[in-house]
Image (cartoon, rainbow, N blue to C red; front, side, top):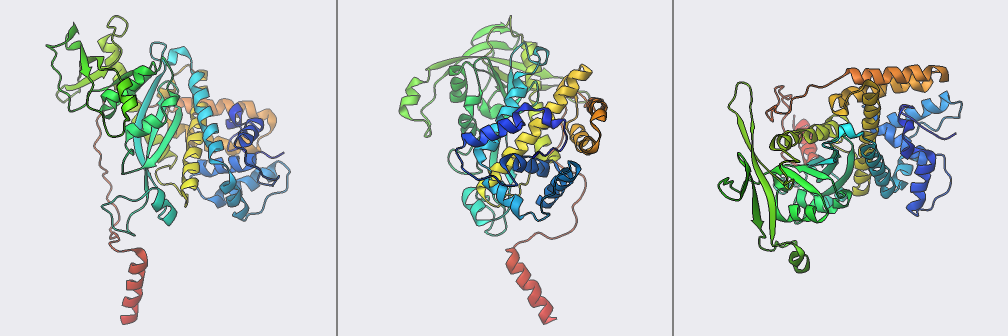
Length: 453
């Protein structure tokens, strides 16, 4: 048998069955001969690498060898060359399809009690990732322009679409950090096909633009977000729905440079939106005030308080990005080519969704909601119980799985929707100076100093 598992619990995901993986491989129409590192083995070894706290190829191959020996199979070579070549042959589209399928299936299987008024809420937000300083990465994802050549690292902007109910990451868009059509709105337009009629998009103020709201309405998707800072609220105008709650009309602005004339003419001349003011009481501080805009226009169906509570759930997308970037380690990827970088990002998405799937199972067993469980705690439990499940007898597996789900459901997080945290750290870094010249030049200066001494 050729199979690998970080934890057999993760193998319960049918999306990653051998048949589905090989079907995804065949759909890419990439030809290849049968090797020891088949697409299935390579995918699961890659998954081990991302799941490992070390994150190195050597660690992943070592885990694979341990599994092969435990299954009575001849182990592969401890040399990582074959695995690295196989990982390079793995099609990017194949990994992306599997990652997206895992996330969408988890979102679709979420019980109705996890949803908001029976509807699927999707969170959108952007972030950045860094990568090794190689000529190929610099050409595709250049470093920031204010950094000197040889002192910065390539940087890419990413945008994720998350499911509020299950926490799964449905899709990911990757682009340059700076330049035309590299902002979060442009990235969202690239992955807008993951939005289906009946969805509710929850975003921050940067998404509250006329053309974005119009494009969402054209898809049958509603929007809830904070009012853009350039718009001023005047509750004396429009159709009054309640205290600090009214309907107003937005007029179509001039055509932006990125929008062609034909599409611009198809955009409606006016949009009716609902604007409301949300007051957030904070203990020990003055009450916070937020302006929220939405296309949920019916006050009897969607009350002001319900919309306010929904917007306060937007904080979850920040926690989801922190989970995949900090807990899993996607903040700095290791790929030395743009293709390998994107492949690695999709593998992080796949592993993230697998962990969310285990959390969803644990939540169902405990009668909880996945948002009440700790992602870091689940990741730790999967890593620890994975080794026990790997070498345990078949008869002991049900008890271990029950203990795994019980451990995950025991680690809960506090519900703090209105918390405020400074973007600062307390612990001081070590007093090492920063490089102000390229490393090869700094190394040359050190050698010259030693010779002069």
